[in-house]
Amino acid sequence: MTCNKCKSESKIQAECVKWLWNTHPETRGLFFEINNNPLNAVDGAKRLALGMVKGIPDTCFLWAGQAWFVEFKDAKGKQSKDQKICEARFAQAGIKYFIIRDLCSFQELINIILNYG
Image (tube, rainbow, N blue to C red; front, side, top):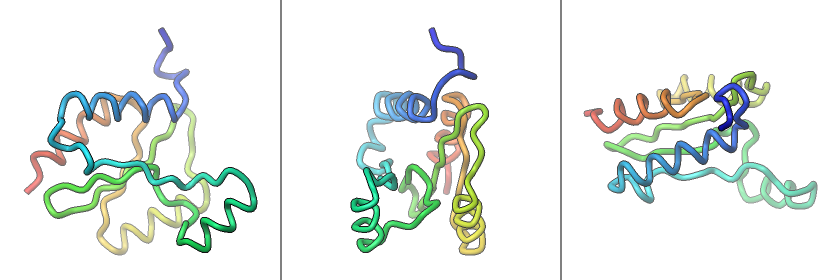
């Protein structure tokens, strides 16, 4: 078993998505990944032309007429400069932005969101 401090961001995210899918099927299609990781420079240029923005969070959850954005980080993960800028812009616009590092924190956040409104 992998300790929580050793899990990669993608493993944490996958664990959270699996839990949400299985525990709250009513949310299916409302929580989704934002693919912001180009394969190479050519793919990156194409994605930028199509509207990709550096620093955008990993996922979005649409619920109760709101958009909730979640960035997954491992135990030691830090936001990039672009992610900090994005978080600040979201805050100015009143958009909800969260950093999640483990399943327990994600479960708590989802319970708050599902009871929102």
